[in-house]
Length: 269
Image: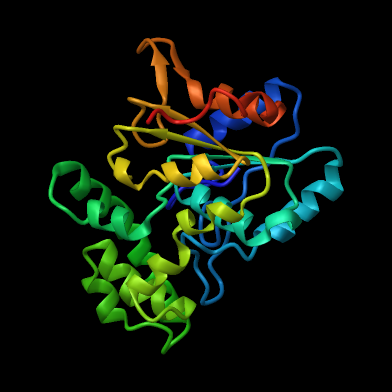
């Protein structure tokens, strides 16, 4: 399981899915992105939405440890990483099936939405940029010359952060180059493992126009679960006193038998 931006293996949605997997009698593991959760920040490398370099090692280790089929679920940023990696690997992907939840398929469009007006956007920017700046300043302090600390302190938008932190740390020309190079939508035609894309039409972070309808229709490896409501990594039903997190059941059902989603799971026109 791969968490979202500034999440970790301790995030509620990850722990909920871990519990659901264990209830089925499955082995399950959650991967912390570098600098997240209990992963220590020691080198100049942080993480970003297209950083796939650790996934091959993780999947090979887990397959060797457990044997049998291996599936993955990625949430938001983690879903973008997962889909990009599946596209990069193609037929060589060391997974049997995957689920990607509330993915920012177009990183530039999602950055623009989050940097735009509105209370939700402002709250999201404030919360996540606060911890992202802190990590970037830690890199600047331990590795002089890697980043400009004054520029990092001035970051108040995701566009600024990606231009002043992500791009120089990972060798992109600028934020636009990073967004174009790492948006998972471009990698979907090369995915060769059964993969479910779960998306809510009212997602406040990912514009509905960014959902890759054409790629889902063109690639038989891709299936979709599109709901009118569910927010971002939400998909909650039931009652306030007894909520039901529908994505847990949907994700595990798909991983258990992805072939049954091949028919009747296409998006409406």
